[in-house]
Length: 348
Image: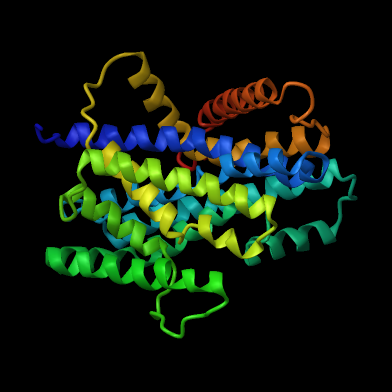
């Protein structure tokens, strides 16, 4: 297979961000519907609905792996000034603006009175990360960006074996050992930096640089079998009410790790010709992906919670399809319009 040039690689990242963006809308739509209407539908319907959202948990890890592949690249110049102005301050600005927007939205929809209490609750939610749940990703990005100079040093001065060793340690201690919790046996072994997200950051870099080589067919098999396992295990969890199984589709789950790595590896090998309607469509989505991520929950919340629209009634397949397509289109055009505003252009 011919090696991809840099332009083709960057386009492949646009593809994965665009598709992950659409998948996140699907994930959040099914997850929100399950939470709001789960007690009004049958156990099996609820289980399948949650299985659809759980099988899409690869989305955020693929975003993080793309970030790692781009920002850990040795040839990319990333000064502290650029880091703070282009990355950290942008996410902080988005966080401040959208926690305020979401607090205002809730205030209006819940009929709350404008007052100092609303301002104080907004400040509290902003600081504690208790605003709308999907904003957790922004807090994650800020933390990763703050550590980026040190992560770049690790990538720059490490041998291939060192990177592989780091990834193995992360998988063993953060993803595999916690599986013993399923049998009520908690491991006493741990590493002192025990979240999975640096793993995804370095894994994206390692795959992109060829430090870790993933065979195309192996990647397909990994994605297929891990996805099937997540679906089956989700159905078992909800039909048999086994709460402890929830960890099997968290971001540190070994199944999600295998799934996300396989998907990223497949996209990293895509040969992008740079023409055609699908190519332009995906690039346009990518340009608006951050705004779509921030905005789409307004419409999900408004339609499902405040309009009390139950997509499980009547023809649920058509309902969910139209709901997801509609939310995506509205979110895209809202982002496209907002990006015309100078102050928001560089944030969204």
